[in-house]
Image (cartoon, rainbow, N blue to C red; front, top):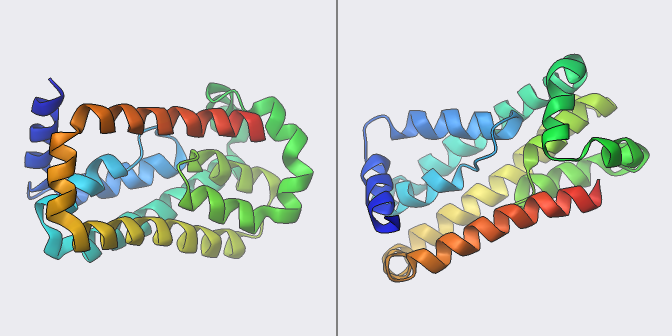
Length: 193
């Protein structure tokens, strides 16, 4: 079943609307959706390594735009939308406790969340709630998200075929590792906030 899903994802990665799908996923993940864009970036670059930089750029720009939407949720719609999202991740109570620290180190926190597997959307919303300077937020997001997506693109561009072979031979183990990383990111957020 995993192999069929992988083959299906690889075929979608070469689809003429794949860049649009990546843009939508990247935007949504930065503000409210739980699935990271890596599920599309990796197969898209493996399917067309010559487009690695374009894929990374689209993902970075739409992720930052989604982050700005998340900031807006925190600043203007926290009670209606932001609070339920933080409750979904069981991060509301600890977020309230961490608010002071967030205001002091917001740029570093946003950069780290943008680069790491920690759910970025929590920090985009938190930035709006705490009133972080929007320009600092946008720049930290751009650097963090850009570093993450361009690093992935560079590694896949340089080592594409060996990585593709490795993924295809170890698909079950890598899927498990990805799920554990995703869960670990949620747990880390719960512990930090």
